[in-house]
Image 1: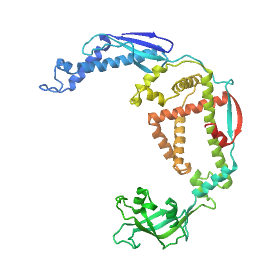
Image 2: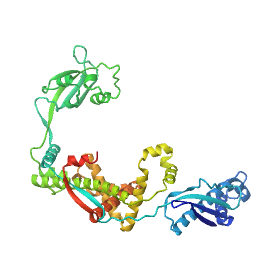
Image 3: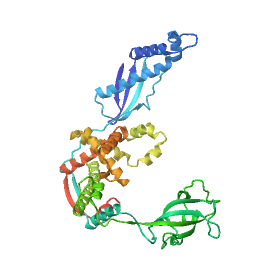
Image 4: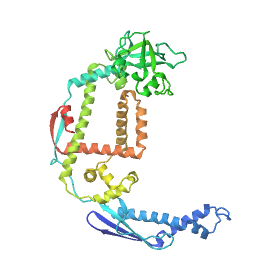
Length: 453
């Protein structure tokens, strides 16, 4: 075997690999013997077919498989042993074409294009000057959050008269032109929210009513969404095009949602966990702490956006952009892309590639590592945030559940890579906050949001 590297320029190289018969023949012979032991050929007992017959049937396929295995190992061993700093993965050469006939045992010459990583240096130090935004927390935000918790602790309470937000229990049934119940017509014991009726004229029919009242309405006007009408009737087979839409709703019970006047300990425990908050002052302190953490995280995002822009500007180097586009188009995930679609999907591809190289250099220069415990903690935080988006506060999630969900997520390679990258970004952010020259600037949240426009 012979391997040669030809550097075309500072960013591109071609690697030539020459394989002789001795490099792959033993692997081919071993594979063919394994096939001989298992193959069934007509006229021969299992495993007793002559090797000549096996070769005639399988030799070319086995040659291709084993030569490619040897070739791949040789290529990546060479890159590793010679410390070739490359980007993406080697691709079959565009200019030097290998002529290969696997029906013959012979020497083969293969050519690969390799993108070489640019050489540069980058430091995160006090020459990096950035603005660190300190987002003000308005007391009205805290008060609004307290009201939201009181709403969350509220409950449906029986009332005498319906309003715009009332929850009605009763029976809906089909009627004739005179408003009389149709025997054997559609009917269902059901519930409905007055607020779900969008048409103002129709909604007015349901307001100011009492238990026992009967409300006549047109089903298709009150519930123009066919799925909502089917849900009300508990019947997925109705057809809006043919249905008699005259219906009535007889109210049996009226409920209005009433926020809690005061939060009880059971509410605090449900929202925040056992005995973590005990009164309204502690609630406000907890809410303020949550906003401080959330605003600090958003401020850090802006800090890293600015740091990324400054670091990209601070160092000048070229990247093998043409090769990287070609490599991406060879990936399975972009199999339906052409060059125009790829460039449209990634308009800032060059900067993204450069930032990835800068980020890797910062990680290497500062010995940044991510432990399994850090991955798990990040996965747990991400999972808790997702539960919160579905209205499930952290206090309601048993710790063992959160731990199991996080571990299941880390078991997926794509999720683990994403979480690991998040931890790396967080560590680089902390490095920037430690090393760079930062100027604090107080700002309202509204003004801060405008910085992203």
